[in-house]
Length: 342
Image 1 (tube, rainbow, N blue to C red):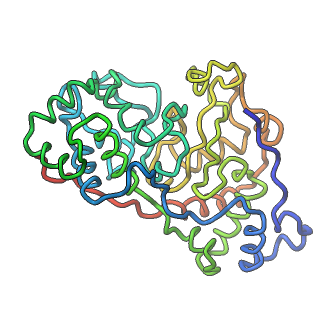
Image 2 (spheres, rainbow, N blue to C red):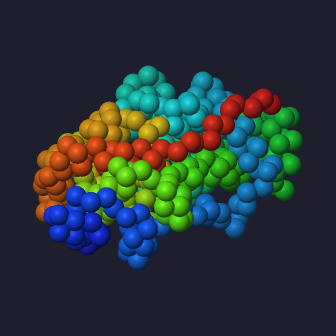
Image 3 (cartoon, rainbow, N blue to C red):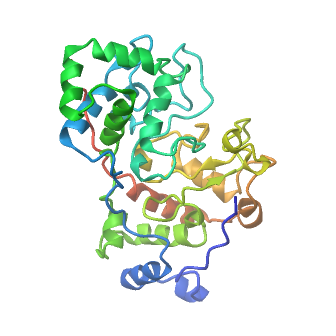
């Protein structure tokens, strides 16, 4: 996959050293960002035509999401690893397998997952509907066959009624996926100070947060991969993590994809620690330090990081400013609770 090119300097970076000591004019800065087109307001979540957001489908999806009977041992639900009170993750470095063993990857948050073009760290699911069925069938996660799950649900009169209300053809594996995906598309963070700023409220960000955004879009080069409406370019990169995770290579079998993972969105970021696909970084402060030094030494580390981020050379003040901006992206994720199960 083609590497991104180095970003052009931001308005502040183009100024003289003397001018850089002055405060950023929010109106001019917003106009500059708008002209660049890389950072744009987050719109409505894309809805597939074959799965419109019907209330009865969303209700069914929420019910399924919290029901541990979807797993083979009837003890693990979707919410077990994607807990609403843990930023729709599990606050663990990596997945706890159904047998109690430690998994290889971090449980990614569901926040804004409906905006991705692919799902999972390696992008193996082409849609949120496809993603929804993956953990159910995975022997390390929920360890349930779809045939058995459909059979169990059909034996529950309450679920029969819910499915018949939501879908003409009742209980099918496809409809389980549709219901879960519809509910997950409701888990959105978008009304952040950053969004309000991009939408024209030039008072939404503090002076420090503005400086952080300027760094994000310029010197720190975060925008290279974290761009677009969901702050993810939907591409895959090897950011240097010293891990044996094959990443995208497991899907494509292309050597250049070894260790590459999809760029995650930054929305809800203050709620989703620890960070990285292997959960190896505990805090945002450490994330900034990681990228500032150019990452670790994986042999397939992306060219851009080796060429332009080795190291970046952020000052302590700049790191503090960047952190202040990143915190504006946390927002307030909707906290859905477990409904009465049939």
